[in-house]
Image 1 (spheres, rainbow, N blue to C red):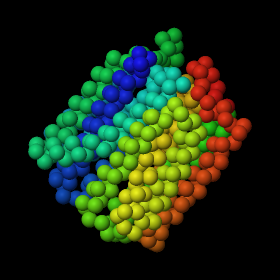
Image 2 (image 1 turned 90 degrees about the vertical axis):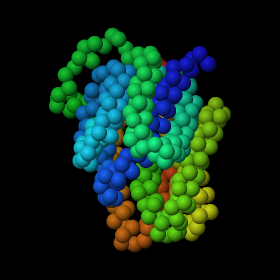
Image 3 (image 1 turned 45 degrees about the vertical axis):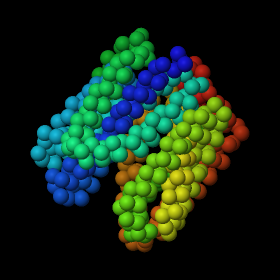
Image 4 (image 1 turned 120 degrees about the vertical axis):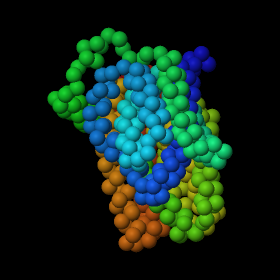
Length: 413
């Protein structure tokens, strides 16, 4: 257990931050709605993060791979905490949008930095178990956060929930401060490189070169992310489907969301307990196939019971999929370019996600919500089945075995 001291410290820190984020999410939606009375103003908040990603991720990876990851994460959390604390004092929704953009920009640095940091912090043989427990805290925060926020808003004030999120970022930064510095101290020249257009161009070339040399990893990555992007696009039609197709009221809608959260929490617990017994191949294949099946069940539903069953299946098995894929990613991408690869991938995924979501919404207007979403779910299931075939190619088994630190950089070739 001594070897798990630092990973557990990281999990607790991020878990507190995630809980604060979910508490904040409910509050900021209600605050903007209260200020404007406009559902469109609330919807506008959901394009701020993708916009921040598009404007920062083309160059943020170059900085991340050259900076001290621990200090970068601490700085990003402190900045986000201070910015969130400003929101209750703002009287203009446009000012809130501006601060939220800066918060999302800081988050664009934190995410890839944390992926690289965790890859260095956690030994390869422990990554699957770590990712399972990390998924457990994430799902727990998603289940508990909105409920806590609802209670706070009911008995105090909306602004209290926002302040709690600000504090949670500072607490997370404090946890990270007590973690070790995993960056090598003997590369000062590289870390002092000036980030200019030529540097960014070389870094993009390095990512492209890696992608060409790691064809199997890129294939698995593209198939998995295709399933995830279809799933996220389907999520944009979730409320419309529940309200207009199966005609559930607000109470049943809230209950369905809670059921999905409970399924995800149960799946995270099962994944953590099974991490030593199930192979990485099984985590990814079972997770992605059955989570896609859960979407198909949900969008073929005609009532509450079938919809709830679909949510439970999706929530339970998506924990396995996310745990398996995170481990596969950490074992495959060299840590030297992990920040650049993560940032570049997020940039491209963001653009594809926006286009896919708009396309699905437009198709739903022309046809019907259920028909389009069910076709999307079945397409995701078909891609998942092909991914399972790719995963179980006998000659590729080495990609799913725990790597030693020394061989990690070469594992994706």
